[in-house]
Amino acid sequence: MKLHRTQPAISQAVRRLEESVGERLFDRATKDATLTEAGRLLRDYADRLLRLSEEAEEAVKDLRDLRRGRVLIGCNEASVHAVLPLIERFRDGHPLVHVDVRRIPARQLGAEVAQGSLDFGVLTFQPAEAQLGSIVLGQDELVMLVHPSHPLANSREVTLSECARQTVIAHNDPSHVRDRVLRLFEQHHIPANILVSLPSLEGIKRAVAMQMGVALLPRRCAESEIARGELAALAMPEVRLRRHVRLVFRKGGERSHAATAFLASVEEKKKAHPRGHEVHEEIEDHEEQKPKRSVG
Image (cartoon, rainbow, N blue to C red; front, side):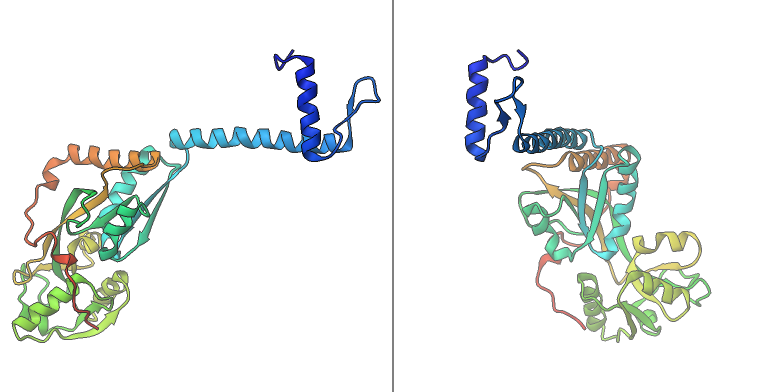
């Protein structure tokens, strides 16, 4: 009566199940046809399967309702600062979604996002992959960072020649910015004077704060230190590296509920602050994708 099936149909189903497992599941010698040991064991597994089915349905519902899920973002070390405000805004509305930011070289990001290995990437150039779209998050410029007590700290600008007279602290990981700056020094026949190389941006900023030298870094990497007065940033007119910082994503294909919500959050922020995205770009979008000479 519970299954809305006839007794013979139920009996046939039970016999097929017994044939399938190779064991008798009911003791038919008893009046109530009690379960055998094999029947009780199989019933326990059936109960567990039913509970697992319910858990699976609930997990999928949690994904849809953004009570779980993951957003996977790729960027290099310098771009982390640009994506942090986006994560903060997203987590205000979706605190249970895991946001996973992975350090990936900029030249690999476009392909990783296009293949679906990443939900998003943060770049300072327009990716070559046609299936990718992008949202401009803001602008980025290269500055010379010095300690506030440095003799040049009160200057608004600094020349390549003045920079070369300082002890320069640089990142030892080859990058487009590093290559471009070194070429500028070479073109002006000025030694770069890199005397200290470190593996992280935090280490470089700390070294400048310890008055070990100066550093050429994207301004966005040191905004908080500049605001607190721990570092001073000087413009370098001869090094015109002002670029758009972009969030890139696949325009087509399936996107998780969490990734869809993250993209919507970024788009809402852009609509709320449109002027922040109207910046002039002084470098060709695709320049960073050309093969570069590695500099040790």
